[in-house]
Image 1 (cartoon, one colour):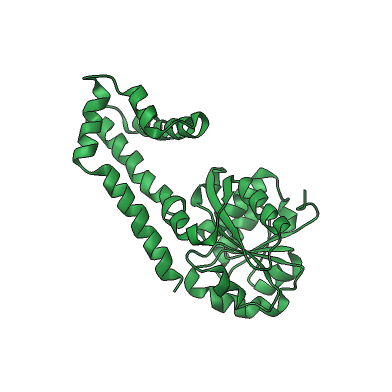
Image 2 (cartoon, helix red, strand yellow):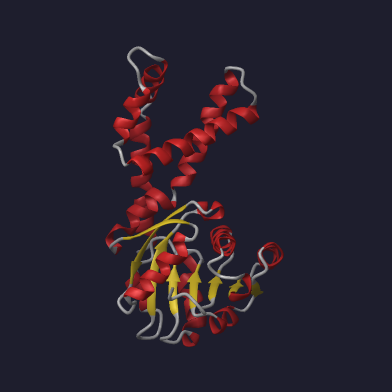
Length: 271
């Protein structure tokens, strides 16, 4: 594997950065001693140092100097400012991976010195439990090996695919933001069962496992979701009564609108 002997750095240890660091180290792709992390917020660094054992610092230059691959896990609004402080320490031998939502490769590359290798990735928070859905796209100077390295890193915490950059906003709206759409659904399903008398703990387990099971069936059978739905839905049965309510409430339209609106916000962040 081309990652052998390489060291990984993270600039930004917020929720997403910390989730990726924990997930990648737990997966064993990099040992904690080969991972460097920097942030101005010391409590998050201390938490990572204690829980995972990675090298931490408040100085981004330490992370860049000691790493072969540097993940920029900062908010889009401060990405340019962060790049300005490290760009002269980023040599052509180093690979930059940006997970900043909406910020295009062209805009990232022009902030660095000429020749900098950049890959853009949109992961999601499920990296915490090694079930992230991520998409990558490679920049002008990035090689096929760079793309393969990025895929290997993000596949260690879930699934990862490669797409063209024009599709990254759609990815952001779908899988980047997607877990936040599903959590209220799990809660709402459990609420319905609690209303009918089931205890809260049991209801949450059954609701969450139902979502996991349905997703696994969709992925592993590769059947159309409509076909899978019909497998559960018998004439005049219990399931069709529930589906009728979902259709009356416009659940499918609401999910479509959520993905589209989130994608639009991603486009706005990139302007």
